[in-house]
Image (cartoon, rainbow, N blue to C red):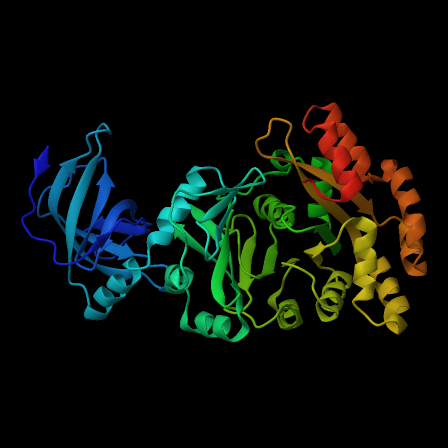
Length: 462
């Protein structure tokens, strides 16, 4: 079934998929969340979208268009002007519609944005192909990382100026100014209502380049992540203290931290304040009140946010990453005053995590830092992701240090060389070493012995 346009297109359309919510024209208050429509193409004059429902010619809808570069949606009315059946999909139609009651500045905003929307097609292709990362590098085609391997996408070479053309429409003026001043920018955005990406923009040999990481839309449970359930639930029930998730880059630290927060959110009545750079997983308050604060848009720094957070009546404080002495000291103060503090840190194992925390401060302050850390630390979970035996996906390996009375003594005295023995003999207190956990994964047939031996020898998987 094909119905001809009753009005001609007046502008260029781009094949993009952006979030658009619609309501019946009679629902002037736009009640509820609205119905999301999947766009086929978009222009400054109108939109075509896929629908299983047939809208009659002349039907008027109220819509909110969520352009990535705008903090608020563009609201206008939409009139259906064409209907076309999709030949290869049963009961699926392409509805063509034109905007009216659209402000001039909003029409200009749409026209400007769609010129740079090829990024959406790249992301869609990468996600459907099972990729975790998309690399935009000048002089190379877009590259994706899938199951640890880098693979080229079927697209031409990226030229100078193309990356900022794709990414600048996603940024506010303040973010653009920050990037052009510092040459670095981390942010996150959602191309639709069910997916989210963390983006790092940077310069390399004078060119703007970027890496985009796909963030799972659903937060996995402890069981799904392969974490020790009883131990993790025990952490969530603590009233105060410091819990650290350690690991190297791309070891899933943030995913684990958000799994802890979401478990608290679903099972306890708490006030949870997160401080992140950027916000990766977006959480919805359930039994708990969840407040997610992002560096740059909501606060200027971890240290400044931690100064103020105790006045926000928190039960749980979640810090994206401990990077400085000031951040560590603020985290320990909060943990000592009856708050559960959860954070991540870059470190190669649990014992090195303690050394790194102490080394944030000058040597003359080390005894005081060790004393404070020994009194507020609850545990350190170190984790690593190893390629699965089936060559698809990754398997989580962990090491767990619990701050027992004996461990507190070793931390205060700075006797790092003895902590390994305590880890090895502390199974009854819930501790385990990484090599023992990896051997268990081998025995369960989840990872290959060669992969584990390579990691234990070289500290990486490839």
